[in-house]
Image (cartoon, rainbow, N blue to C red; front, side, top):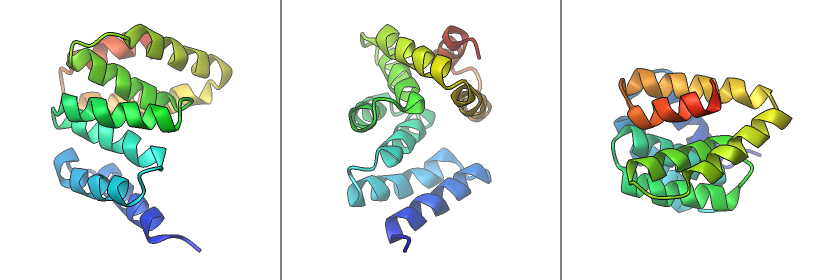
Length: 139
């Protein structure tokens, strides 16, 4: 049986993917992470939305938690790299290298990351940190 948290997650993702603004979906993911704090996907999405909404400090906290919960998730690492760049923090290279290693072992992950990066640049044109990460990952 599907839990209500899974359903809320899927509904929020569907709203985002159908074009809802990051600011509109952000409260849903705040609720999701409050209700299911051990779900890395919720934290990964929350960090992404916080980055899109120009909340780098909040995104840094969320992205660190997402990586702590699932260190193999390349999107969580990309989000953490972006938050580190946006807050002028150190450690970006280590996370980019992990993403490159994951992509080398699972090339299909690159397609998902490329789609995510393209979405980010469409929703936040001229996003310098994301453009840097995109070039580092050669996507």
